[in-house]
Length: 69
Image (cartoon, rainbow, N blue to C red; front, side):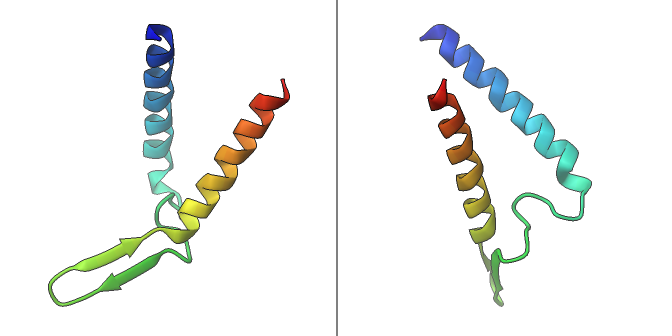
């Protein structure tokens, strides 16, 4: 269990680094075309629909590849 938690932490840190590096690209994760943004007088509502779909497809692909082993 301890090794799995350490591995998960390393993977999360690596993913965070990749996201930081990709912030300056034109299509940032979380700000893709199709994400819903509603701005009002006193606040804003933001829901990343396309980002959620893209991440779901990527995670499904990774899980499918891991199960094939």
